Length: 124
Image 1 (cartoon, rainbow, N blue to C red):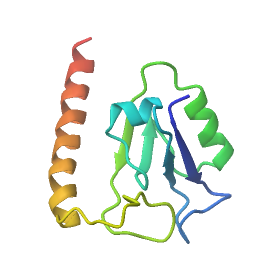
Image 2 (image 1 turned 180 degrees about the horizontal axis):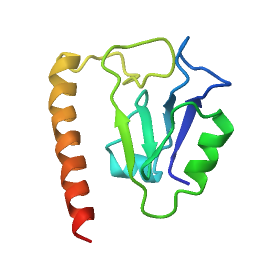
Image 3 (image 1 turned 30 degrees about the vertical axis):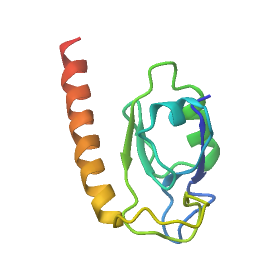
């Protein structure tokens, strides 16, 4: 598999009045964990160019299962903590950096990586 679990869908809303698909868990040593870009709480907007909007949970799961070896995800980072699965350090220590100081550069890097990937795929 891809190494992560999802929640959400039109039939299993994770956030009230939002049928989007979210990453609920990154499996240690799985593909997503080893890649390092996907984070728990990310909203997945599309898989290999297929929009996940207004899908039932099981239909979204099938899209992931049939995604193939080379998978492209369009995601939206969670900017504000909400109830539900959120990763934590578990050791009782804070990193000393604000959430914005971590997320803003990460979002810029993710956007640049998606742009480069899309430009590279157009050349193929």
